[in-house]
Image 1 (spheres, rainbow, N blue to C red):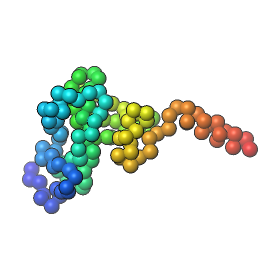
Image 2 (image 1 turned 90 degrees about the vertical axis):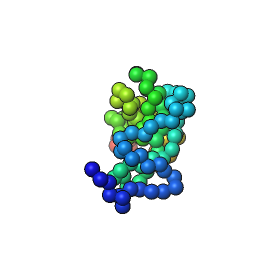
Image 3 (image 1 turned 30 degrees about the vertical axis):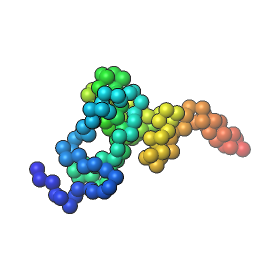
Length: 128
């Protein structure tokens, strides 16, 4: 399959991934990556209109170093990253991964207690 050169997104911020499947993690990052995702750069792939931030992390299940961009959303309205080895997901929560939501331009989902408080206030409003 030939790629239409006009469809390739180009900018000074990102790296083009020609294979269109996965970002190869540099050896120095692969050896030091931990369980918490760390930003490794903006990447684009064939057919993409723009670029996305990618994060490297080590999977807690298969211990594989992975690189992925935030996908959304889980049942709780949270973003997630997928392991390149076992495809297990790392759900990005509000407290530990606030920087990723900020980078995506999204407000982190409310936690349990904030949601509960909103429901109580709503119920009081309905009673009048």
